[in-house]
Length: 303
Image (cartoon, rainbow, N blue to C red; front, side, top):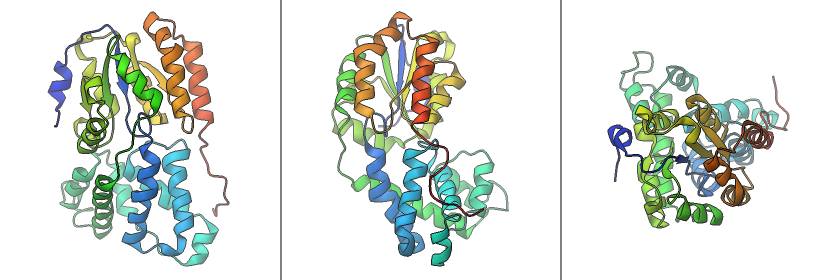
């Protein structure tokens, strides 16, 4: 099932509070599996990087899972990963030929829309002659399409136990929706296979905009007071999206996901509903969240 922007804008408010919930890495521990079982192997296969497999996996995991770039667009993280790999002494010594990301940087600087469709449009010349028929972008698109195919083959990953408990009860107190940058097909598969789709009113996916746009559409027309909206996420981008819209944020800390859900379910969510999720408490949780993800890797880099 697919959803469009107007459906989200028209979604009726049945409760006073709205809860936006990220999916990958937040409800499901799927980011780690997708990186290790799909993203990395497809990069290695497409560019013949078997000689630096260890460094590639470590670098991509840092960018996508363990640093402050966690949760950003796949193409942004791919570009950042290649830049970091190019600064690793052991990669330079290996003689491995890394992917050409010059045209990718140009495309990313254009402001999007990102995603496979956006990249296909750039290759078709819709972003200008500079990127039309770019061989390097075609290669990167092939990688992204290969990732999507690989993800489809993964076994269904269950939600974190306390995430499931929260989802089973949140609808009695607030209007929950999924707010995600994952494609709709993957979201439908994960939520329906785990039989938790009935616990959310709507699935806002990558195809209908960014998380900022999702939250904006869901609150359009003043359906919810912004101080009665909570975004739950596991990445700094989720926090930034909430701050841009002007709503509350609750972090699911990487590596401590289930404990984070338990803390939300057993105390913080009640504070949010009663208006007691104060600035000081929210900021304390945000600070702890960011402190758990470094900005720079701890391995040597060549300038």
